[in-house]
Image 1 (spheres, rainbow, N blue to C red):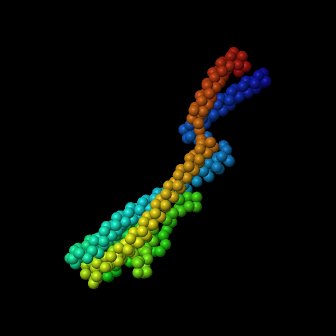
Image 2 (cartoon, rainbow, N blue to C red):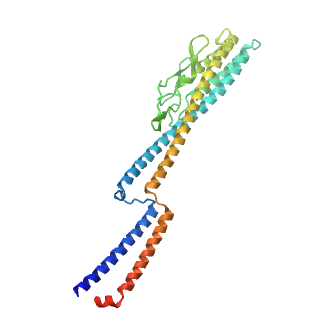
Image 3 (cartoon, rainbow, N blue to C red):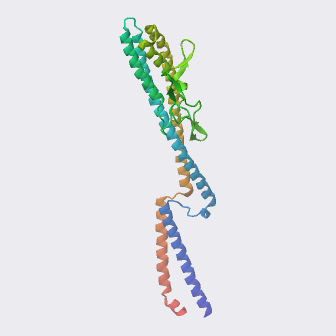
Amino acid sequence: MSIVSTSTSAFFERARRDMKDLRTQAENYQAQMSSGSKLERSSDNPVAASRLRALARQEKLSGIDQTSARRANADLSLADAAMSDMADALIHAQELAMRASSSTLTDIQRASIGEELDQIFNNLLSLANARDSSGHALFGGESAGDAYALEASGKAVYVGTTGSRELPLGDGQSVTPSLTGPTFLSFGAADGSVTDLLTVVHTLAQALKGGSADPAGAAGNALADLRTGLDTLSTGQTVIGTRLAWIDVTDDRRVNLSELRSSEEADLGGVDLATALAQLQETMTVLEASQASFTRLASLSLFDRMG
């Protein structure tokens, strides 16, 4: 009789264990579908879990680089817009200098042009002191304040730093998010000296307002410097445009790498919902069949008598 009792106990224990395993398996499938991950614990697959952690770190760092890239793009776009406005102002200054160089103008007319050039100078100074996305000097290097300040004589001088910060773009790449003022505003004048566009415009304005014995000659001489200065400014804009294009290239690469990481994460720990659902349904069917079979077997008279 003890042998029969032992067999009966073994039957019930095995049945309970099998159904428990099926329920656990079904719960695992449900959890995977809910979380989207096949790995509930690192111990499920230590190698895959380690790789998934590495991929997650890379994606987080990529997000930081993306933030820096967006900031660099914003600052470079601000610089490009400011420099475009400067170029428009300088083209107008050239037109005014050409008019002022005419011998047919009166001193009053030249003085009026000088006043207009003063307005252009103030506009150029304001643009040179434009702010970046953080509120710092856009063209002042690492300076938090203005890039240019006015001397007592009214001349603008650069007060920013010579160096500029760089922002990381990822994979060891970085970009300088602007240019320092002297980089694109300073140039070699026709007389061999080093000057800048702000000085040229300011000096011409003063000459036309009575500060020169030969205002028409001063206007003619300023034309060459204005053309050279505009070329220097255009070169600076080309540099800005190249940096913006480089950010686009690194952004494309970052997106491609992110897609590759996502694909690898899906292969390592991702859940195919259709497959998981089919497996869940199969497991539930087997579980229901096992429960029904157990109920029928447990109710047989043989087991009743063995009990």
